[in-house]
Figure 1 (cartoon, one colour):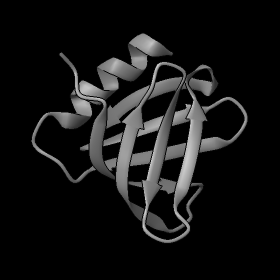
Figure 2 (figure 1 turned 45 degrees about the vertical axis):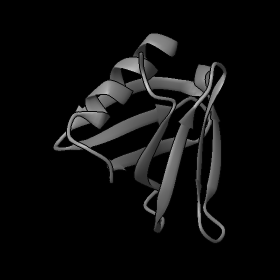
Figure 3 (figure 1 turned 90 degrees about the vertical axis):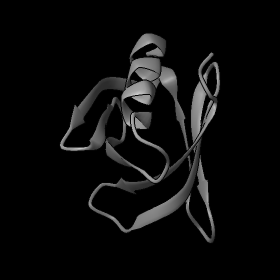
Figure 4 (figure 1 turned 60 degrees about the horizontal axis):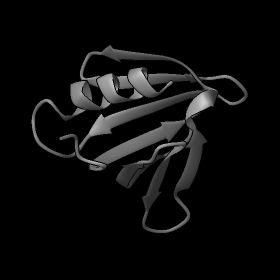
Length: 88
């Protein structure tokens, strides 16, 4: 069974990196961290999911790109990539 929460960092549109957790729901993914870092992405907004050089690159339909990195155990991003590709 896949986990629904992951420790990650993320970066939107060349902006600052945020650290926190990614929660994968049936309709969206939620990135939340300390401070002002909080992003909700509907799964149907994800155009592509690519795993490159230890990071996930998500291309969003109406919002540019989202970069996600691992703060959790080995293999987490590949597991997450598979889950997002299946959901999108």
